[in-house]
Image: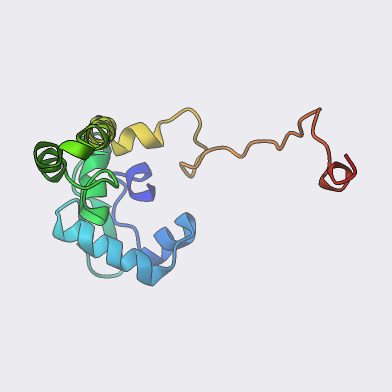
Length: 150
């Protein structure tokens, strides 16, 4: 997200990204290498070197990144595999159909959401994270110790 927030401000060092995003540098290096190989980010060498997005954040869809890092968009496998199961397995057809619908819904959301949408979200603070919520205690909550006596 930091690369999107600082788009067109030049390359950012891995150390700075890791610090701001609270990620281990080695882990971040692996992710950035995958993103670089997919031509989503580019690297620059030298004293002012680092990484930057190759395209505007508004042109990078979450589906592209999820597929790159995690593979299929939903935990139920790819659409072709699910369609094959629907055709072959009559006994579980309805279940596989639900899985396919969940996968398709997830795909639609991720394919229509860009990195720009995420960083411009009204529930985000300057680091692109959701603002912390105040903890509220339910008025009718009974402490665990008291429940044992009920």
